[in-house]
Picture 1 (cartoon, rainbow, N blue to C red):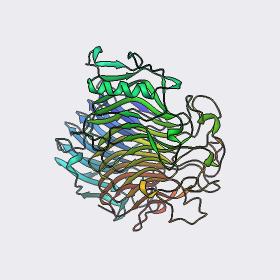
Picture 2: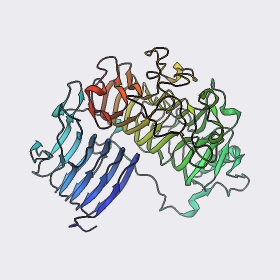
Picture 3: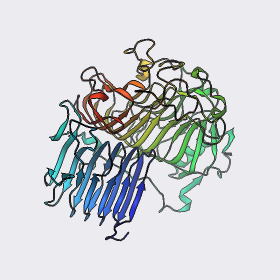
Picture 4: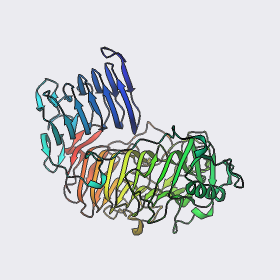
Length: 565
């Protein structure tokens, strides 16, 4: 774009629900990125010669991670509209004007435009943060550790407070930033380095949405890993009636979200859940990359763990999953779209768990969406009533990176960090199941049984008939250490029976507790949380901060939660 432009905009996110915009350069223009989306993780964005690099016209929580403002007039503009909160993380301003200009929030009013700046490099005398009147709120300095403007626990509202945030070295790159990795493109690989899974002699693979391809696919993936080949999945629906094993040394890439779809009796025993896709065995060390695939279930499978990762890499990024949604219902390849409309969800316990990062794993996940469908994308009934037991369970202790992820409509929780250690999470986007809350037919944990072996919340803190309390936990923390969470987008919209009427939203708050912390975690740093329609932002047994006392954004706003730091 022209560097002197008065009107060009590089990317305009005018609305909707995005989780990740990553790895791009924007040159010139009046505004590099203009955003009013519900929530976004912007990662590795290089702004060059933009009059304004990032302009917010709304949006409830935004993470700018590893961005560079190079010769830009203004880095971030928070003076138009009302943003909830924004975190500027691991970023650089060079030869540029003011880093952030914002309409100042205070202890009164809506408390929008709350800010955290963490690990900023700055090379000139221009101020870092100014208000809309041009008054300096953070003066020029070469580096910023952590600076907060907005609601905080402990301490209440902060008007520009500096903190120190210690970081676990296992999560960092050589510059001290949280590690990130681009999705592999394989553009430089020769054709003979790929294996088309539909073209391997002796191992017929159909991808027709009906035939069991598990035996052939397991043989092909083992052979590809042993021979350092990249396994290419042409678009299709590859039904597996036994676990698909991805060994160390694997690289899988799909065409247009090729689908692995679990089916059959192997995955129906709720008391002995089995992975549909299993990446490595416990204790394995090596490489495993998966990109542009989709993992699903072909029918209700109450014993299915859709994706289980056990392997760890020798180096950060050796184990990675990119641009790979996990979907339960809503699409053409599954019978769930036609058979799950009863309000009693015991008839549609569709999957045990979406993603399991086991205690031996170390993995990097980027642009991953775990979606239990509320409606059909490919025809069938206009709505579905599905119960997936759990969203993402992280029990890893070595190092885990979650960059731009979402987990929606899962019954007990959307995210559960159970005694996990060394975790970075940039954006945790959630929605509570639409059929929970007041008037719900079944109250959590029913129709599931909370299992201690999986660290399940059991809702014992709720009254027996309290539907607003017995509602899915957005992010559940149980113990653990060195947890660095940024920009939780925790939304609730509906309660009671779900019939597909998106206009019939909760009157008042939908649920009591949105997030939960137990087990006294150590070094838990949680920045940039937005909530919608919940009484309590964090049920922690200590501060229990409420939306009423921490307003902003779409309801509740907490730019710095450091109760267990």
